[in-house]
Length: 379
Image: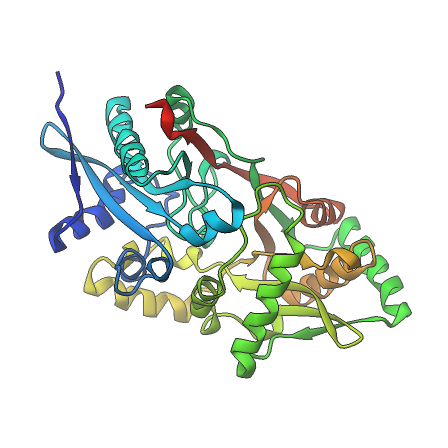
């Protein structure tokens, strides 16, 4: 009978094993995009990770007969729990071989961790950041993930179901929109022309010289625009700025758009080049020579996809043409920059603005993820 043991990550060697274990799981998967190890190292470092400014987390390694077989993280986010009146134990960095006993041992470790802290529900998987590698992929494993999206083996969902995990909320999805000329694109242009004739809504690009002020605006829009969604988590201001900071150096401010009415910012649509089309070939910057390849690929390779991570509109401006105008301006500019298609991820399936607006211009859902919960008292 196999022996499963769990070890808490404590040493530098442990952390290295924790970070590089996914290479074992995905070594034969050509669609997997390795995480960038320098970024991951900062995320899990209590001295540098933004999450640790407000929460506590521990990381664990699972061994089967002495061989590394899985990883998991257990975390408590007191600020978010207080805001949502919950006592949830967040789990993430969940990777494991195709062995249910290993999965059981990892999950039971997190259950005990949460129970010791008086928490009553597992919630995840998330990699500490609620927007990073969201959930378990349940549809779309035949297409590489875009930046910030997760990619998991097909057996992950089956193990979640077998253990007794239940969906914590509606599925989240990624949609794709071709930027080729089409009846849907032409219809979007006609609708936008009608809105423009009213002269009430203007579109402006981001101003990176006012970075903190722009982040403040986005933070307000996120809080108000998504408050209607079931189980909305919301954003912490410092976490939002940390998430956006890397894009400051790679994004074109002319493709990060704000909608303004009478001097008030009422909408937001950011476009980020899908650098996963490059990162898929640089091995997570695991070795020094991978940096040379990254530098070379950044020079010669232009991503075909631009990803729009949010389409935010204040509720009082729904159905007033703001989303239409943002989408038309965005698709026009993206086409001019040579992009071939737009990814919209990750949005909740019950978000009427993002999903319905995208579908009206020919978008199709091509990936789905599920986040789960499980009662800690069940162990």
